[in-house]
Image 1 (cartoon, one colour):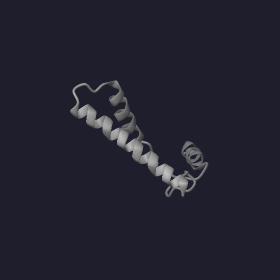
Image 2 (cartoon, one colour):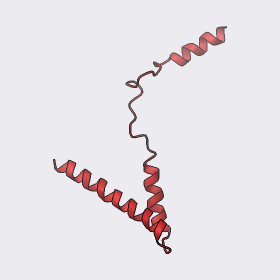
Image 3 (tube, helix red, strand yellow):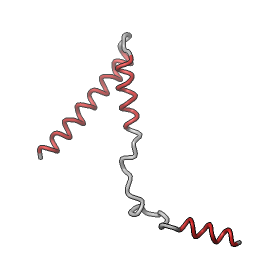
Image 4 (cartoon, one colour):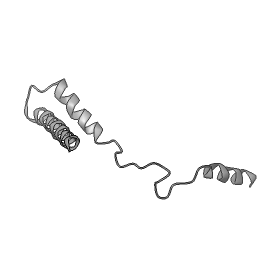
Amino acid sequence: MAGRIARWGAVLGLGALWWWAVARLVLAPGAGVLEGTVAAGGWGLSLLPVHCVPEARAEGTLGAGRWRRAWRVWLRG
């Protein structure tokens, strides 16, 4: 339970920090490198593939060695 609370606290705190940086970049004429770095870093984290599964468990993946076998068949013609 404590881990879940700490995780949500970190998520909400970092989310608030990101929104503060974006708001300062848009609204404050004196916003600088710190705000830009925080905003760009948060946006970059959103590009991480957090919904990935291991290749062995993913649907539609090819088994180990399948490409090698297909290449050999193609080379034999």
